[in-house]
Image (cartoon, rainbow, N blue to C red):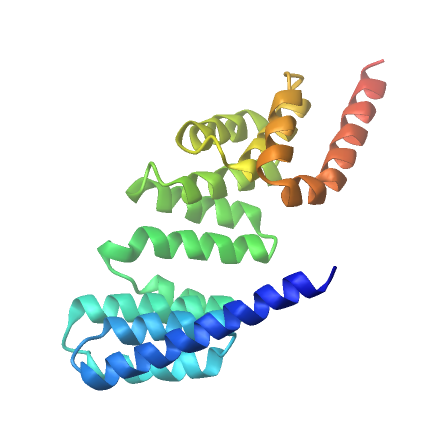
Length: 226
């Protein structure tokens, strides 16, 4: 049973390595274009070759420093390299200097860094700032909702999860978390969990511990009221 995932990983790696070769050729043939550098760095991150990706983007920043659009995209790419490598201070330094075009996604990445560090209040502040420039972005709305859930603001979390699901009804992750919120709020929740189980069985299975914790919390609340 374990051969299937490892075979898929091997196939994915082979595809990525082929793509690396193609992008290296593009860089050689079109040295004045910055996008192949950015795309190659993205593939190197997928291959967990973080040092190579960093070196490539630093080189590209030197080559394209006279092109503002290129500089912006390359700083964003470098931030993603550091984020993937879990070098969060360096990632924040890159995302923090982005201009208007990437400001929203930069703030979203900073929010995700604070989430990873368990600082949900700060993550929420950055996610809401990101949302101001991209109000209908599903990923941003979901990060806002997740942090509201984490800080216990269930009413607001419900509002944002509803916005996520209005835009992306097949989001199993959001369906499950909306079910948790409904459960705490004393609303009907079974339908959310049923959809989550169908749409994202892996997240549903992973979320069972959350479910147990919420049920314990509700039970304790009822006991305190009696």
